[in-house]
Image (cartoon, rainbow, N blue to C red; front, top):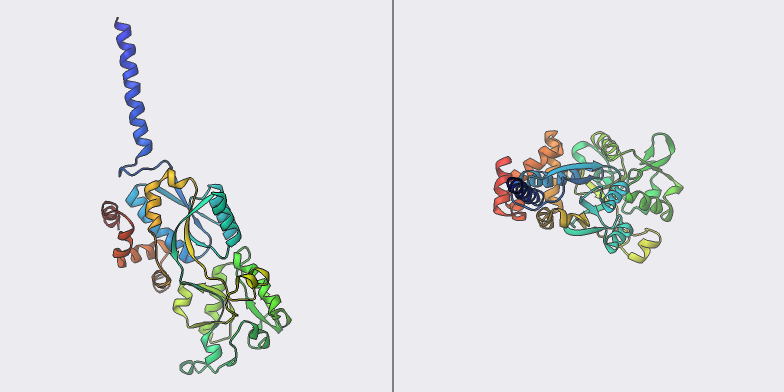
Length: 338
């Protein structure tokens, strides 16, 4: 009889512990549901992506008591990581730059698009505005007053002289491995830029910024790929060179149009909605615009701040925005952490 009671008591204890263990796996300290140890975000190599990562990480970690991490790499590598599930969240998917693989991943059910972060952005080949208009305050004369379009660039090799090949000009492309690099390669051919200009491939976004900053501060000519929202486009007076209006058929065939409209979305791996439904609900409300993003990037530049510091500043400045993405309870936890 005594042995039977011991066995029954042991079974009772196991049942209770098992039930407690199930509760621990399904809810974290806030009572929000989660079935994933660490949520991994992608860093595809530019500062606005890093700022949005930092904002999301602050809210996920402090509001939902959920660990996060970041995996850095090229656009192609990080997006493949999202498809494979090695990465859980993509805060800045420039959908038209990766249109084919993005749509294939959506159709295959490998990823889910849950929000549009912003959609009022530009990209293409820029020149400092003083190249066209001059700058009397800096005693800079117009260098190419008739420059209007990307195709016009081939008429100005002497203005955009390549320091390593003075007989030709230089256009700064996007870094190798970025989705837009191949588009600019195609533009070089279709617009005839390769007749007089060299297609220069920088090693990184930082290399583009350093090149532009050096030229701008010296009042010299410069032309190259960039995009908004960025700290650079907020800080400097730049002109986006014109191209024919976007036409999908022409774009798919030759890239001889302006870049397509680009929804910059928040996308997640297919499993995350089940693994962390509350976090996904927050991310589905995540929405900014180019101006809001550039404010954080300008703060980085002016204060020599890193993306996390800029994210904290941005959240303090725009409490009304980010608190609308989450419940009052979560908002209070994050505000206390800030």
